[in-house]
Length: 327
Image 1 (cartoon, one colour):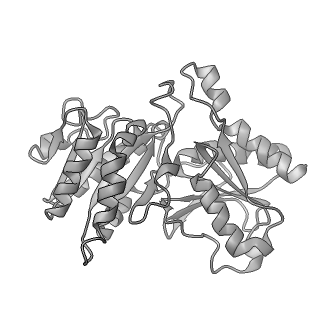
Image 2 (image 1 turned 30 degrees about the horizontal axis):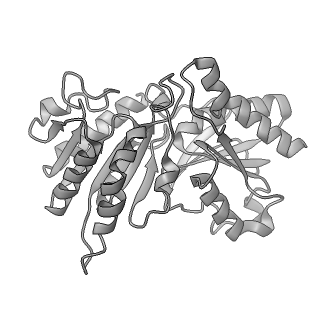
Image 3 (image 1 turned 60 degrees about the vertical axis):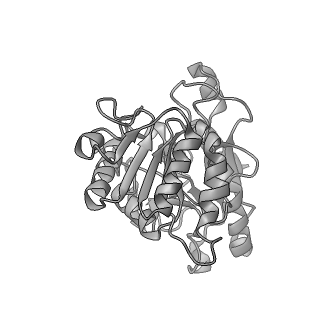
């Protein structure tokens, strides 16, 4: 099963299980089924609860807030994550605040889905990774789809919390198979964090969101074969609040070198938040500060060869890790 199929199946499962659930978005109904076909078949099975809307991200998100406050549940599909900026006001100033500002806790089960990232040649305004703009908003959780986390479990957990969430879905993942890792690595998922590893005591650990996983894995394989550097990859399903994957483990199990790779540009990022937490908790065990790997500080070009120069890729990750460990 590919990631897109897994996500589609998860949505079908949620709608079949919960008659209070609605989905709103642009062109989400059949036969189109969404720009990336993630909502395919839903409007045919649940015609009264899957609704295509006008092009107004602000209004769509506001309606979702009203549904949640009325006792229903809502999923919003933003066709491209870049345009979630148009929903920033209702999402950050109303939805995220509404759970706690009425004198008693209020359930706010709203999920905003955001197809994100580059690598598809869509250009400057359809290729950005804007996760960092939602990290640290009180009352708002941030998640990212990965090829190692079953989306039915992820979505059920999100709605079980009845809290507003943003789910980023890297577009390059949609056609990739679930649970696939290159030999000789193996994958296991514990407590919401996928661990792809070869050795219990690696030379370094790379922490990355799901959309970066295949790029990190390719770099890990080349580092192993060419440099004899053993890496472990940690992929959390929930980016914020961030759960430190090393808390509670002995000092010998915390690697001396930790890297965080993400596709966003540097400055106030999720990776910086991760590094801050790890420095607080494990500074004495680290050989050097956590190394952050970002895309270049540039708009994202449409031309493929230029886009590859800007975005983080396998070569970037390989080079940074090799230079840090060998330099």
